[in-house]
Image (cartoon, rainbow, N blue to C red; front, side, top):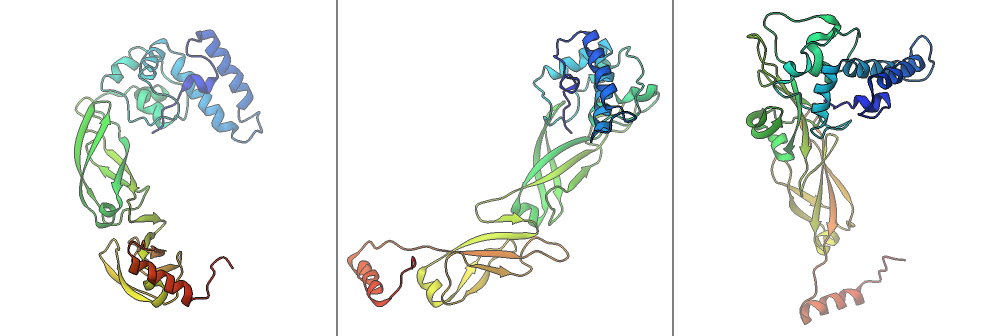
Length: 297
């Protein structure tokens, strides 16, 4: 969830007076009202201005928001939810909201008073959203993964079961690991968005897996069968004689799991050994005499 800088939305400084905030809101509301403006995105800008004004026009809500912002948050920063005592800070006497639609960020701060509805009785806690980075090998194989999260309640370590073949951007829901409920209500859920860390061997490109394979000059020139790593284990790859460096070879079905599975794309990289003895230098000299070859021709 993205932290919203309501002062930036209204185009005012954090020390702006109530009158300046009201004037800025009215100016934007007149400019972007859907019944008046034909500008692209006007409706979204109107809603953003309305939301910012609802957050800042009430002194208690503005004070609580300022305290949160003073913690170092800026517009666009990742925001994982307010601290546990936020409900008491932000709602101690504020007026009911008049807006119709508000962002997840706004509702996470002031949601119990949206559209003037005070919630009585048990209330389920809000869901928390976070991103977790998983190594590409772990994401391919699946299994248990220990992750450490930092949120408004501090740092905690969780064991998460990763489905085999999970893709970047997919989500994992952990029931009951979100914000605590109120009045005996159930806790919310923790929703993890998965990012995949690449490593020195494997890179993910859509559903294909990319690997660079070092080969010797004689393997490339004469052809060879060599071992190549895949996420599912080592396999043998036949290199055709006369292969150049940069040649791409495809191992079908050896990429990311799915229906259909992706492929593994192997790029050949010819590594030339150094001639460190007289005999090795003589071999290179014999090659130079034996081949009429100029790669720059």
